[in-house]
Image (cartoon, rainbow, N blue to C red):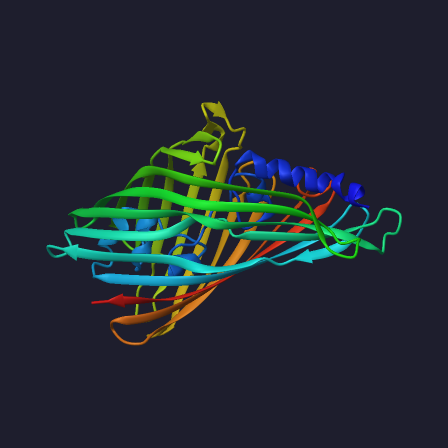
Length: 392
């Protein structure tokens, strides 16, 4: 019976992947490739689909555009946490259906912004995960000759994040124009383990086991501008610089070269006692230029779209909605479409509470790496985030 399990293509592929020293993430596709991008940083912009290049009234958007620190021109500190459950519905080629539900909890964002000289200058620092790598999967294996008989299971578990720690500075060149510069220090550590367990005998036996770990370090320099001369429109542009990363395992090292690109953001404040805001971000990312050890990675160019809406239903309660479209860089016809929502409460002139949620879907057919070929995987992304913003 043990030989039957050991010949499983699922386990063989999983162990081969563990030995490859890749990066892992919160979903199957992320685990198979270089991870899933984290869309939401600041809770308010995240509730608005992640749109923030055109400016927001929270400090964490300096990660999107460092020039946003001059708006609204007040010292701020924000901290957010996120609970991230995902549901995978797996339909095997022989029509068996089962579910996998990994979940993680951690810091969503930390950011502080301090303006100086009547808001002519602003200094800030932000932290947020760029890739969330917490994921687990377990699959029961059945006997080929007796389909109702369980003979074992295989599982893999990954943990860790790739983070950005970002100091930034911005300057108002005029009442209508601001520029900003940020330096992204990128670092993270991830671990991976895969096991094949035989449960057909009296005692469970570990048939195969593999472990791997990878560390990532690197940096990126971003430059942003904000233009407010088309009131009530606020237009932002960010040049995201090329990044050079180093990934290391116990036995290997590789250099990752990420290309530069430009993102456009527009924010429209209607004004009034109960203000309404619209926000839009567009990020064309030329990922065909990504290289691993000087060789092209074989990724696709993608365009990330983010759209958001905010309306203050009372002077102390906002309501936010958003949408983002995130094509998968290794096969852009596979796309994550997600809706976001959020609200908050103004406790005082200094303290704001914020809440954000997300619901998204992504569907595809396995290529035979972790799951057998022609297995259908339906991923449902969910996220709940909460935090506080303090002004002084």
